Image (cartoon, rainbow over all chains, first blue to last red; front, side, top):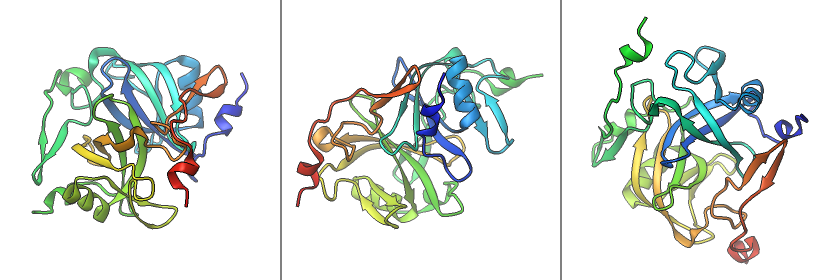
Length: 129
Length: 129
């Protein structure tokens, strides 16, 4: 497969691109992360989301520990070519490491960020060893 | 209003936070941009999206030229506190400077980014002077 489509992305100086994951069914925004060229290529070839962990400085196959993989249904690119959008089937219905459906579980009400979404599974159960 | 909620955001070293705008009705992801502290405070106080333009290095009130303002219905923060999500009513139904509903109008098919969404209004009409 040609990799011209990868060259069309306007990578940051660090070689990254922001990636937004949206639930293909509910339309809910699940998470925001970063990808490098290798992780995006792997995402497309495997059909499952692979991100680049900036904190761990390594490829991060989403769900590698929790089992909450993301099956990619559609991949989109924005007008400037510098952000990708993944439409995914979220296995387990949980994208957030806190055990919630979405990482965006806090909402501003007045001058406070209030937790609005329930924990579906305790993190100890997701990552317990 | 207390500004403690602004302090709870994990700003980048440049003082920015990524912002995702989602259509409150359709659930469609409209655009991705950046905010600084002032633009986020203005967004909340005015109820309309104000971003920080990194290319122009100034505040950018969405729709200031096109009239396609974004009325903010809900503001969310992610688990790490470093990304905000705006649920908006997109005036004019057009968020992209190309005249499309969403900036994410290209989809990967095979090894090509294909344009999938129609231009609703010619850019010359949006920005014509």
